[in-house]
Amino acid sequence: MRFLHTADWHVGKTLKGHSRLDEQERVLREIVGIARERQVDAVLVAGDLYDTAAPSADAQKLVVRTLRSLAATGAEVIAIAGNHDHARALDAYRPLAADAGITLVGEVRTAERGGVVRFAARSTGEPVTVAVLPFLSQRYAVRAAELVAHTAADNTNAYDQQLRDILAALTAGFSDDGVNLVMAHLTVLNGRFGGGERTAQSIFEYAVPASIFPIEAHYVALGHLHRRQRMEAPCPVHYSGAPLAIDFGEQENSPVVCLVEASPGTPARITDIPVTSGRRLRTVRGTVAELSVLSETVGDDYLRVWVREPARAGLREEVTAMLPNALEVRIDREFAAVPETSRPSGGGLERSPSELFGEYLGTRGIVDPRVEQLFRRLHDGAEGPFAGPSKGTVG
Image 1: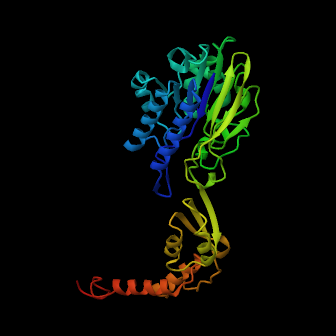
Image 2: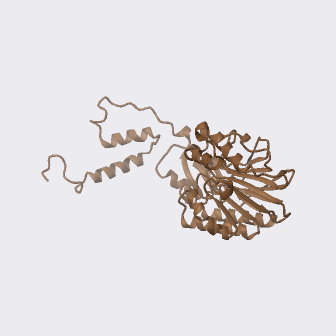
Image 3: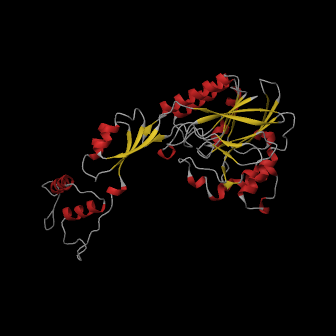
């Protein structure tokens, strides 16, 4: 039987204020096409469907449309909440989603109440058991451990032990005559970050060892880290990575979805299928003249530009005119060094506003007489006849 593993869609995510909803739609349409072409038995979406807990209406429409399209391929569709999703909101839509052949799991649940999903694979008729573990924040870990694993939470304060207890309860029904899967949204120790993760919910106390997953699992489908990777574990444990680079920190990632082929008694075989509909993110460096030459080679890539020249008025506009897809323009650190300045003992009380502004420009590495002239004109205008009463004037 076949399964398609994807995660970290982050629908609604913008890049430097630029909407990527059209691009996200193309990527998700490509994933639907892969599911249809490969005739998979189930699609596993391992969390972070949205980029925010309060997604826009357009973002919600896109996710709903994609999940319905996946279900229309004949596959079982199971999606869990990640740390970016609103878990209770996903659970609120569970009844409607179920009518469309989609299983949504927002909060951690007992096996009997939806923490375990069972179905017969359409390709072989054999049973499939999926233990699902949405993202669990530390403050809810104790409560969830009490609810699912029936443990005395005061016996341990360790996050990984609480997750072990929960997983043990959810996977207790794994059998030898079917395929056993785990889907979770969390950080595994020694996992490599993709570059766009929410760090506060990815490191330190949130990292757990891969050994928490049972050896009986044919495959563990993970979400949260955006880099495609396999974790060392007694069973196959994989992050599918994000199908679209969400920030420039992820520009070197290779977006894929994972095709998982498994059968009872046989370890899963995983094939990476590239996702190519997203636009590439690139960082380029050079002088204005060098960037002008590059403009013919970047295509429709989104760019982060490091300018190897000192800052001056109009520089950003000059760069973006040459490179319309430049979403971020910065001065290279080598040319943005803060010069040393000496302050008169008077501290500024006896210096003009223009002198103080000139000193500020120096601390920012900006040397451009036009900026200083503009400031003087604006300041003189503010001090003009409409500036209000000056000192010594009777109002």
